[in-house]
Length: 331
Ligand code: KG4
Ligand code: ZN
Image (cartoon, rainbow, N blue to C red; front, side, top):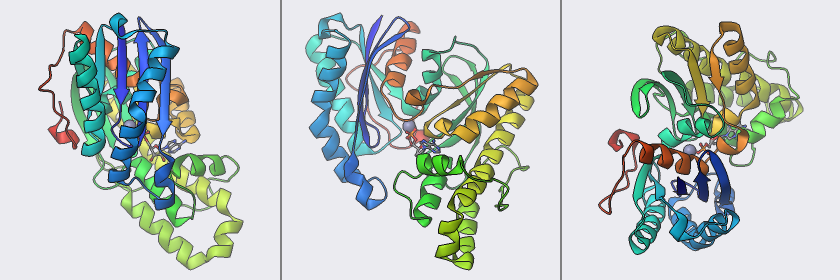
């Protein structure tokens, strides 16, 4: 089964071809235009998607040595995300599908982050997933394929958003998550004890208190002190965020009694988080699935593989397929 995946939900225009367990191409056109604004500007994102989508899809097909006639399906991210951005990918996918008589498959971007794990790992159910991205922090129990139960979510900022907003306070470039990660590697995480909000309270998350606490800390200590101890401060922040994430994943796994756990989304690229979940899985004898770095942050391979799984389960859409901005409105 050969599937073209298209992703345009935020600031990455991406296309990928997946065939029978293999990613044949995985093209990502990132939008540098947002950097000077310190965050994604929705209107600029839609325009940039519009500019690059044709070339991105063409490159994905050509690298995969695939013609449109070889495709069994076109999978496209339909939400959650920025409405204008989603519409570019969705309209493009619909056009390709209808003009070439190829089935269309709408994919939930958050589900796709989870199922990206099945590019490199054997499918295994039931599992608990910790999905940590720029827009979402969710703990999900998946009993069977596409049967998800939400166990917990963030009440304010997402984990990636926390990294990005705290990074902005520290004058780091956007997106700050990878930069904080890199600086943390040469730092001492016990340098300062930042708060671990709600760590022992249910399965929901809260990260806005941490952001405020970092802001006060910087105001109190002053710029020079912060610059001098940047690695240690970043490591202490990373410790606080990852401690909460791992503790909640642990609680969710214990509560559900699963043997399989996975992490997914942009923040699952974080080296400290990866290390902590690996030791937890080892200690508790659980099967841990972690995507390789290229499949953590937004990509179209995850859309293509989820599209293939949906096709296998006979879940196919038609031209009435609509985008959705918020996850609550999604499937
Ligand atoms: O999944 P993703 O690419 O996009 C969304 O669906 O939101 O996640 C992007 C988020 C950003 O907040 C970015 O800072 C964060 O993932 N991120 C990281 C790392 N790499 C990406 N956060 C911490 N450590 C990283 N290595
Ligand atoms: Zn994402």
